[in-house]
Length: 108
Image 1 (cartoon, helix red, strand yellow):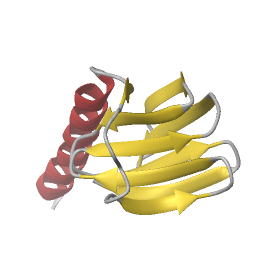
Image 2: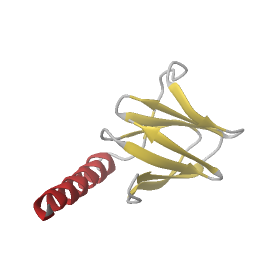
Image 3: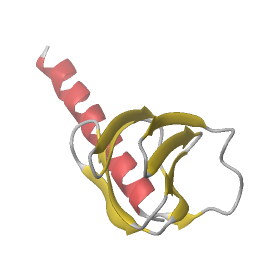
Image 4: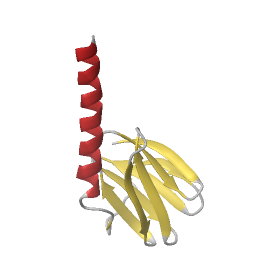
């Protein structure tokens, strides 16, 4: 019983570490292509959050601060992004994205 619990905790820790290190390595990058075909996760008047395979894409009408967390609460990214379309590569998993007053859960 303890062995299974220890294995489960280790597996969760390894997944969180992999998500944090894999996604934090590259950081946010500007996108010049059309993103209208991507799934919309959340939007308000100034920001739109979209999800595609391996990326979270943010369309911002002005420079803004964005934070991305693992489902366990570990910070993956906390940066200011420019106006326009930006994307962040993420490992497979569930994340919380916070931009101003807009917060949503996404699955990559």
